[in-house]
Length: 276
Image 1 (cartoon, rainbow, N blue to C red):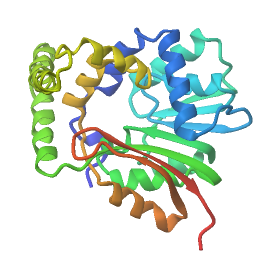
Image 2: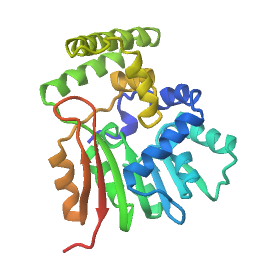
Image 3: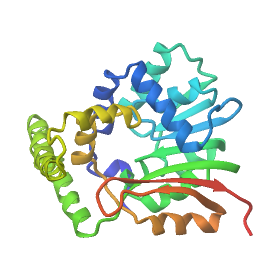
Image 4: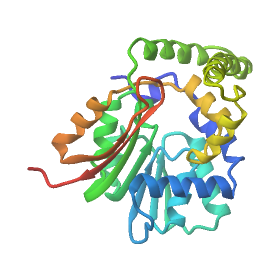
């Protein structure tokens, strides 16, 4: 398997750096609500929260404000800089929020990280280049009785292969052409969505849908499009694949939120039980 540092990679951290400039109290509040809903827990006080692939650091910050002691990990130096900046701006002490650069594929790093009560890895394992190992390493960091949240790209067969080609082309073209390419790809799909809305006698304009993105984990429509069109490495998995990989390790799926047959992330909540 090709190692992460040897592959053609999308600049995830660069995109998160741009997104971090949009973080405000509303986005932070939505991130906190998302974590509470995901883990079915209102108060994180006394719990250790591990954010694997922390991106902008938004969800790490949200976890600290919910009372958790947080460790953030990301492969991309720009993401690390974003998280550290967010920590400093909000005055969070390092003993309550530590930030580390590294790959979840690095066994040495994984062995150094302590186990956590709440492990969060949203949209990360499928971008490592070795999703199976990434899932296994993430799962190894959950403490007994703890919870694991994963979000993994849905397996679409031929459609997933077409998206892979779109992403590969994005990462080959000159930097100045990338925003135009994202706009072109996004426009095709936004037009399709508009037609569907019109056929349902709804407002076909996408503005209301874009605004909803801020209510969806505090995210941004444009930065999500950039991430989706450019994100390499890229792997996908069916719900059965993820659940069956973790079941032998004692994980029970408490909740699975799928996207059906379309593109996007299936979301999983697992709890770690004693092995039978």
